Image (cartoon, rainbow, N blue to C red; front, side, top):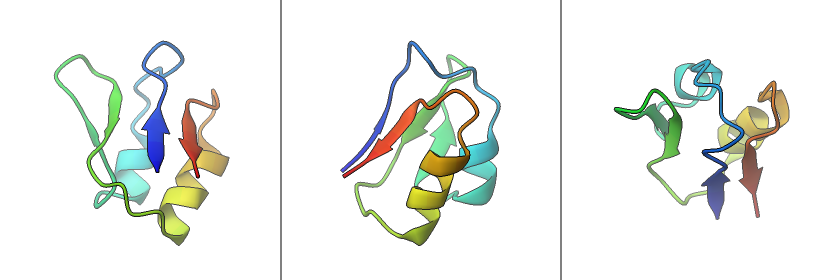
Length: 57
């Protein structure tokens, strides 16, 4: 499961840029998970998120 905390997300786009099959930037300027497939790129995005807004399980 991939979850983005909308309260924490600052909309930097790092996750969507590095893992476009898992994330997009929505109309509110925040990251949104578009896949629930936890793969290496999703885990990397969670690790690299500057505000810790992404969790993967």
